[in-house]
Amino acid sequence: MAAVICGSLAFDTIMTFEGRFADQILPDQLHILNVSFLVPGLRRDFGGCAGNIAYSLNALGGRALPMATVGSDGADYLERLRSLGISTEFVRQVGDTFTAQAMIMNDRDNNQITAFHPGAMQQAHITKVTARDDIRLGIVAPDGREGMLQHAEQFKAARIPFVFDPGQGLPMFDGEELKHFVELADWVVVNDYEGKMLSQRTGWSLAELSKRVQGLVVTLAAEGCEVWTQGEREHVPAVKPTAVVEPTGCGDAWRGALLYGLEQGWPLARCAALGNRLGALKIAQRGPQNYQVDRQALGLA
Image (cartoon, rainbow, N blue to C red; front, side, top):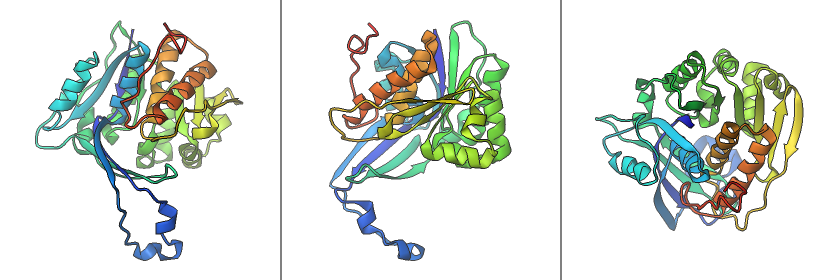
């Protein structure tokens, strides 16, 4: 069975600043901010939420169907997905625009500053979610605003259970829109900061949010995650990585593991535990799609 992954495909330009952002930014001078960072390390990776989640799910042995748009420069990404055995049937290439681009700068403490150009992602709504016998799950990850709104409605209409993962797209929506997403979704996943914003905008506490869906997960980076079910919270501890190299893509790796576990019918806490293990694998490697998964070592073979 397959999972439809609605979200962005993007090229990530990743830069490494060897100092600390906090040492370069004067809090009392933010109104005239003018800073420059020397970044000796620079590379370009395949990224975007849909691409990263699809990579994770595919590596675990699941079947990923990314639903996304790329621009006139997206041929390399299409070839990349196909080389991994990931279907591109729901990926549309549109002209007169670039594929989404993320410019990500990490400091020595793994803090990030990101600039994002949406490009073709803003046309994500041109592809529709429809019911199909081989599609069991879906996820609405950060994408174009209209695409996120329409795909959530389409998942519900098609009776395909889905995860609402607003991520960096959360600020695009007001409280009523976010409430509607939650009412449509079966599961919600946010990080700690997003969870606070989601609660503030909807007026619902995390406990209240969790009573409106099958489950809510709040990821806590190095602290693991909290799994909320019907108002009850369970902490799932983190897995210590062999090295901390780069955080880019850790959350998406986690979400691919979530989809894999949900498709297997696992309890949410078990899905989260696998996500924590996969996040630990990813953070030890550079790039969001460069880590290797040993399914036998994870007990999946």
